[in-house]
Length: 65
Image (cartoon, rainbow, N blue to C red; front, side):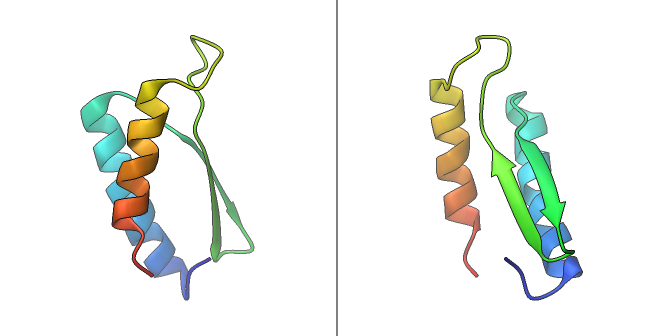
């Protein structure tokens, strides 16, 4: 949960840029304007992979709110 939509958007942009760099994209949903839900799953392998774990670690390192 974020304090503003701008804060949420800035965070999501960091995640999106990194996801583009590593060619591994999470599913993201915005709820009530201030809540972000990120789902990590490798759809083409139909399982959670090392790439998902690595992206999760990156997301946790960026989330400092």
